[in-house]
Image (cartoon, rainbow, N blue to C red; front, side, top):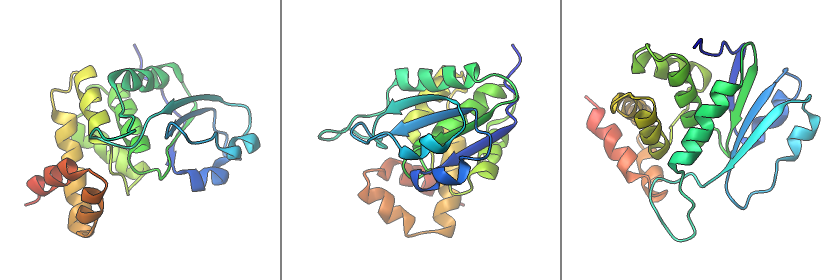
Length: 190
């Protein structure tokens, strides 16, 4: 099967949605917290196909935390497959840093199954340089795509690069209960 040939790929946060209303977006994947209302920005978009998933940007269980699950990753991969050729795919979450970049990375990995993980990660970083993909989502995608842990390892290198240039990010991520990702990044630093 031929992978989709997207004409454009965009990752953004909620506060950036209005900038994309006139850009010919044909497919939108929204990843929102369970209690978050539907973004009003989509009223200004041209007609498009949109799917919404609802879970928190978390990797560890906690009170009232809805973690991403394998069926969520399956839905993301199906959305990427079904988007078709020559489409403008926009994926957003709240900040455009973690859930949305994880979703874009798994769609890219699926669309380019023979490319090494670092090449696929490089594509993601061209789209969204500030990416910090959700490791739980990537772990499920790694399994589903038969990447045998290589996609997760490549994401660890993203964390390492971000921590090298922004060391205080480690404390922020630890406060957000994302210490495992920080440790993965620190373990990849040379």
